Length: 416
Image 1: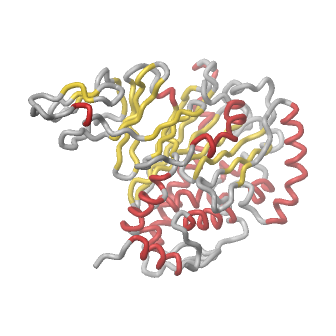
Image 2: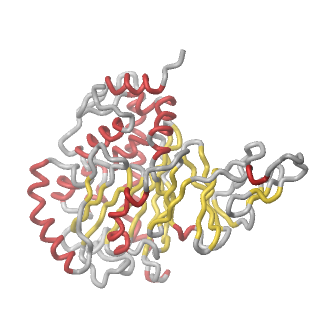
Image 3: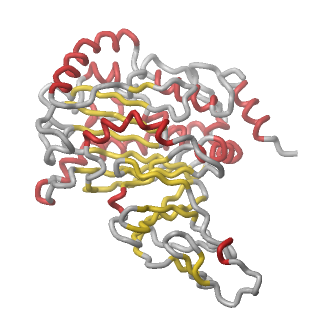
């Protein structure tokens, strides 16, 4: 008899020690991944892309998560819709291309035809009692927020979007994300469980040995204290960093930047984070030489030399400085497969000749390429019969909080 998901998670939580990495099954089991899809991943608002990917009526792109494929399509100038890529006839996918334009959504199998609002328009030779109104495409919850496209796979009503993310509006507005344009996209598919991808992003204990480019762009004290957010470093390092941070916040506020941090507790719905801090002394941007690769972004009238890390959830992150923003999409695909995508945004008014793509992507392309390797190596080691959960360092506080948040999604805690 197979183990019930509730019993399985209770057993695994009981075997988890606070302050240690998770037992192997959390990172490798098909059954755990399916439970995660049902209880965690499928219940969250997930960043799927930027509205500029669908500028014209009928433009669409596919977003793949787990076994699901979601069609994100522009219905009109004011409406973007999302539908499961499943024909209501016999279940064929409708769109097979990653993106395109479709005046109608036509199933290639039997030509059932749907409008951009998901209504079934045509179905040939169906019985007289067939009701087209009951056979439209199944919608996925969608919200476009400051140009960012969020999806939620929940069957029922999802957690309220505005209540969850409304306090982030001032900083997103200041960065001009709604009117930004995509300058570059990078894909880094990673053969590892989604929790390992997130845990790696949520700590900077590995930064010095693994990321020379990243470390060259940041002061050593900030890497230790807040390299992965306000809860990530040792308490004494954070305390030592605070006076310099507060001085920068005061100067940045005088230039118009909305100041404030978010550091959600482990019992929150989405584990949101907002950390703003100064760049390395003398660095205007996160580039190889610290000089800007693009014009100022958003509502800035002058650079303040700062950078932002905003986390909507463990799956959806933004890193931004005065001149560009990067969307990080960590999308679970299977127990040992995660899609990692970065989307670089620049100010929508910036011309092609004003943006140095190579300069802009230098640091984070190198860092994410390195992260792919070290995370896949981490997964390979965890698959060994000799893997045992290891003790976290004082620089991995955000990983400890993430672990507590993850178990809380099941109503559990380390130790049961």
